[in-house]
Length: 464
Image 1 (cartoon, rainbow, N blue to C red):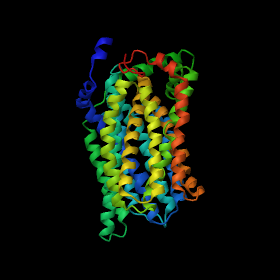
Image 2: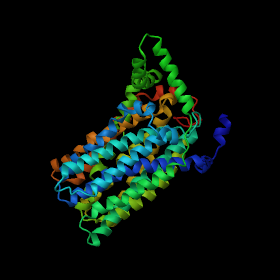
Image 3: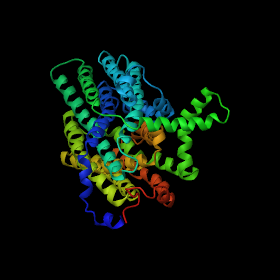
């Protein structure tokens, strides 16, 4: 087996992308990424064009904080069935359709309000979208992981790459569509051009739900059996049926993570997951505001940051999946983390030099290139760590902790720029060094990880 692994060429893993399961995972990624367009770039530009300050826009980003806590209700999503829909659509799909419907309703509400008169309502609806989206991610990620077998390491790495491509497709192309449509309505003289745009974006939600019907579910029987076995162990302790259900639903998935990894390694893993993308989050939260301040139009941002950025992300995410499979996820995480941090310096250079279409394009390309590589290795890494008996809960736990830094900490990004008196260059330099603590956490547990994931088809430390 070792000889066969060593004789593989770099292009051999490419064939895994032609598996029909990858098309389904791509769709799930799109469904997951699209809501970020609504409460991210669209909401930010909408509020900016209504005259709100950078600090206000930054603090409005606290609505993303719900993504950091969706693991708290993930156990319920793993077990509670949606009346009627679960029987007709399956457990995972029923939850996705329900939550997509909530997001669609929120868009209808946004289409009827003005943020200058109803800021509290606008932010509250944004919070409702964030809650629905964060809850949706619990079951989307579980359904995505369950498309791949437990021992299919290379398929898991490829699936992570495709999921990231799907997420960025939903976010980047969805963002481009929202900006183009908004600018088109604005040019046509539509008074509430953003409100009209949200109705158009609602059509995307409907199309995604139709396509979801072609994604099958699997592994339900094994998952339910494993959960019942754990409940049976709890029942032997003398607990009543309600207590057994509560403990089995809420505590077993978390205890399983610490039991499998050990307390020390588990805590270091959580520290790494929390800190890895904090610098990228600070940059991303303020980037669209920065573009506008130095003179780029919505059309410019749509072309360079959304359209060009999406193309670069797709290409380098797929390549990143191949690199992760060949080099090993630990090495890939370290390299991509350092590269992602270094790419932020390009934005500092853009800030110091002033408006430049060429430098803007170069900064976007490098940022999306390194972010794509970092994201696919990160998703593949935490996907390999979950216990399939509690897929939704454990992945939600890890993903939520990773989101905490990108939401709770990065919500102060606007205030940081203001505290620096609008010195964008210094701001981007500070985001460059924010990745280092996470890599220290990873370095401290490198040997334990080698033992924990030993035997996986994709060796976390590289082949051979």
